[in-house]
Length: 325
Ligand SMILES: NC(=O)c1ccc[n+]([C@@H]2O[C@H](COP(=O)([O-])OP(=O)(O)OC[C@H]3O[C@@H](n4cnc5c(N)ncnc54)[C@H](O)[C@@H]3O)[C@@H](O)[C@H]2O)c1
Image 1 (cartoon, rainbow, N blue to C red):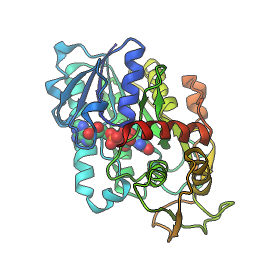
Image 2 (tube, rainbow, N blue to C red):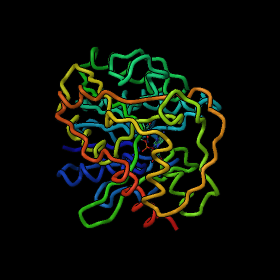
Image 3 (spheres, rainbow, N blue to C red):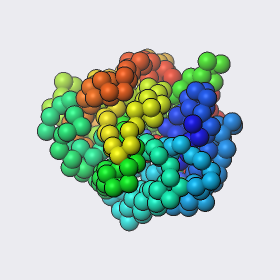
């Protein structure tokens, strides 16, 4: 297939591009490099530096694209509360412009990077796709709004659409030749890469926000999904799309790990002491977030393979060691 990958200079988009190219697809990456890296664009992909709002310049009817995989977006929940207008413009208005271009060009399939943040503080665990949607931050609200836009687009115009709601993405893709493709966010807000920065001496200490949650060790529990497993789900989703249907799948491992467990394994993997400071709880942090991915397993035939913390943190460390000066 000929595929447009928005956000292909970012973490998930670059790993997905690699797997799509290795599977024999043609990939055009569209990315404005606002948070991504030119070097992360896979060398055998075509690169267009542009905002998603300008996607119509690439997605022409003549270009013959078979699908769009839409990874591009702003992803920092905290920032989204301080600059909501930016998140609505980039994640919602930009994505609507992309959808206009998809419709005008007659592209039949669309796969969207949605998020567990659409659920907010869940009433049930593990969280199924049918759980109440109640985002606690603007980031989650923008993603949920675009999920709704896709539902009506499919209904009205026959688009074959899939939203994949990722839980905590982590790890790195280690290619058969040993080279790694991984995570670089600046500023970094995710626990595992921050732990690795502390291990590497780039930060003094790791802050854990709250140790008095109603969990076995008092720290928050999250569902970590390895980026390679996540990227593979996109290949399966492409095959599973059906005209006029918008399918929605949670993607997580189904297992929760506490912040303390992450720190312990990061200490073991990196062989460092990794100083930790307990800080006050952050507003809006749920105690536990664990996915039910039963639907993805049943309908996409998806089975995550790299579900242990040593696997996840080992791969992330391999990328960090080899890509950070
Ligand atoms: N990383 C996670 O844990 C996680 C969890 C849930 C959902 N997601 C979603 O997955 C997607 C990818 O996340 P990521 O971690 O790879 O983020 P990332 O920041 O590494 O990648 C995003 C990419 O999109 C590009 N981009 C941003 N706005 C753009 C615009 N308006 N036009 C063109 N390019 C633009 C950036 O330059 C960057 O290369 C995002 O949509 C995010 O919301 C990520």
